[in-house]
Amino acid sequence: MPPLSSPSIVNGLASAWLFARGRAEGLLLIPPGMDSARHSFVAALVCLPLFIALRLIAWWLQSPPPAGVAVALAGELVGYVLGWVAFALASRILAEQAKRTEQWPQFIAAWNWSNIVQYLLLVVLLVPPALGLPAWVGNALGLAAVGYAMWLEWFVARTALGVQSMTAVMFVVLDLALGLFIGGVTGRIAGT
Image (cartoon, rainbow, N blue to C red):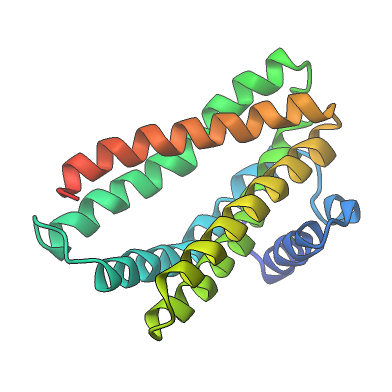
């Protein structure tokens, strides 16, 4: 694995920004190959403080977890790591089935960098309910964020893998299924 360098992180962030606006040229900023895929997991480190902020704000808005914040956060962190790794491994199998093995490294890099946009959006959308706006506003914003995140994942899969719309949907469904499963398991561990 090459050493981490600012230009590749900058390219990953710029790529994510382009994808977030529906611009396929974001893929041009991610070189093909396994080095890009491996390096893109830096996005998980970038997203980690956002993930922690999301959990803490959610517990503040709802109620503290019964097992305590420290235990719950430890369980959530296990799920966080599992989510990043499980999707990468499972999506590789799905890419093989779609005969897109060669495109998978560039796809997973684009997918990982695009997660930063999704986490930022979720944190921003938790601010209005945290400031006391009505719950229906938070719910509407949350629904819009989920819809946008699903579109972004679909767009990245379709663009980076060069697949048809329905095949790209399968990658989104895979991510949702893994997220629900891992969330359920870590929720039990965390006592939430």
